[in-house]
Each structure stands twice: as C-alpha cells, then as structure tokens.
Image (tube, rainbow, N blue to C red):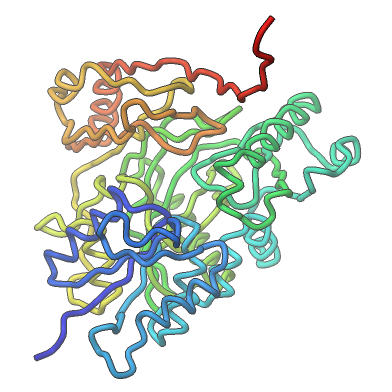
Length: 434
C-alpha cells in the first residue's frame, strides 16, 4: 500500500493561514506537518506536533528538518514538499528542500529575496526598473546620510514585512523623524526577539509615484504563471503604507498587465527562483512597472480567500499543494467573477475591545465573509509600528467596481472599540516609615 503524500508547512506562527493549508490537505488526503519558530524549550504546548525551528538560522533549521524527516529506514518520515508561509521561513524552506533532495528554490535565491537591499542590488544589476536606493547604519552620522538622500524618499528596515517600519520622508526633518521612529521599532523587544539580520541598517529608496498592484503567481521550472493581478485602489502615498483593498481582475490595460508579467518573470530569472508560489509588488506609472519587492511565498493572512480556481472554486492553498506534490489540477484558471479583500486597517494603536456592526456589514450585497482576527483585549499597533490587521472582508460581484464598493460599504458599518494601553510602571524601592 502506497503511503500518502506529505508536506511540511513552515510558518512563523500557526494560525488562520496554516489552517487553510491543513483543510486543503485533508480534502486531498495529504498528510501535513508544521514547522514554526516558537520557543524550542516548550514541548508541543498546543498538541499540534509542530517542529520548533529558528528561522533566523536557516541552515541550522534545515539540518533539524533533515534530521527529523530523514527517509533512510523509516519511510513514514519522508517529506515530499516544503512550503513557506510568510517571508521569514523562505530561506529555511529552500535549505530544507535541498537537504531532503526534493524540489525547491535555490537557497541563494531565497537568501537574496529575504534582504530588501540584496534584492535591489540584484534586480538593478539585471536592468530591472527599481527605485534608486542606498543603505546606511542607524549609528551613522545623519548629516552624512542626508547628503545621499533625494526627496521624496522612503525609509525602511531591510527585512520586516507588511510595510512595518516603512515611512515616507519629504524633507530632511521628516527623514530624521523617520529614522528615529524606525530605530525605536527595531530596538523594541518584539523585533529584537526575531533576531533578524541587519537590524541596525536601513534602506532608503526614491519614492515612486503611481498606482500599486500585486501579482500572485506560481513558478514551474523557472517559468512564471500569473494567477492574479490585484489592483490596490486606495492611494498608497504615505507617510505610512498600510494596505487595505485588493481587487481582481485588474483594471489596467492589457498591454500594461503584460508589461507587469514580463517584469515579474525577468525578476524571477534574475533572482534565480525556480519553483513554487511567488508574491510580487509593483508601482505602475507612465514609465511602466517598477518592481518594489518579490518573495517566494503565497499572499499572506487570509487574503488567499479572494482567489478561487476552476468550476469547483478550488482554493489557492489546494492549488499550491497540487503543484508542489505533482497532483493533477494545478493548472486551473481563476474564476471569472470579480473578487476582493479588504485588510481592515488599524485606525489607532490601543487595546482592542471589540467591534460593533458586523451583522449590518454582513448584509451588504456582495459581501461573502467578514473575519475579525484581532483578539479582544490584545494590544494592536497602528502603522508604521504595526504589522497585523484587525481582520478581513471578502466580496464577489459581476464587476470590479461592485466588488470594491461592497468592501467599502461593509467597512463603513463597522465600529471598532479601543482603550488606551496603560504605561508599565517599573517597581521602585520605597522607604518604609516616616
């Protein structure tokens, strides 16, 4: 009897995105194991048998994966595919695939993608249109740094994702404030615990005006297949770049979409990516598409629910599993209906106390689902310090305008409640008595 196929899913945290893959795998009769970077000193605290890994040390993490899932005399341990969710695990996934002798991206390509600076350098050398850029250490003299800056510009960390820490500066004063604010973010315990490389360096890019789009794709033997081009109808002009609405299919002219696809494929070739999901971000203006960033992983959060494929409306997770494991059906095309997702923005930092109006919002025509993912009584940070949304709204319609309007109308009926976070007082010694 042949054993079922097995896939290893690597994720920084186990949550709604990993559950989508687990559900798709169960439908296909595929076994799933998870690897996450939670504390390795805790022995399976959630009972999910997830492997504890250190994604900041991708080679070491891959060696641990190979040790656990070696297929020498125990076939039940063999892994057939590795998929990374989010940016942090992508180098680990590449090294693990290499160690296990299965299909994966070259580790060098994944390492380049993980650094915004290295990615810029490689793409620029390949002649791909990217913003002018330079990097500097946070400890560098700001006066010297400012001699290189061209305004307006965008200042960002080298490795964080979801636009966390990304700030536009229009003049030297705004530049200095952006650096100060990013420094505080990078020195925070939440970021320090990630042990990201180059935490003490920042990237400066010339601000590129224009519309922003996202490309969701699948690479097969080095060739790109575009699954969807998402328009981002809200202007992303700064000073911070929290994303909100994605809608597809794109409104852009066919020749512009073709130029975006060609740019993405050129970037994939320049970086050396060869297989699996890919998510890319572009700015588009009269000069054509500008590559902002590209990563060998699927779209994040619950956004994949905006995509369905084939007559049975197969999920993106199922499509990716079919491709990774060589199961028929990975060539299905996206449904014809327009669809969209709103990543519900964080209006202000504070303790999330709940949301009113969900019932009204769910009745809006075209709204398919509303998922609030923020946990009540948790602190939620607004951008640029934040990186997690309050939840997601999904819509489908006959037209792109209809899908977009449904998202805006539903969001307008939601009322979020916050309370301020009280400052933490450090204990002090007190003299007892008079």
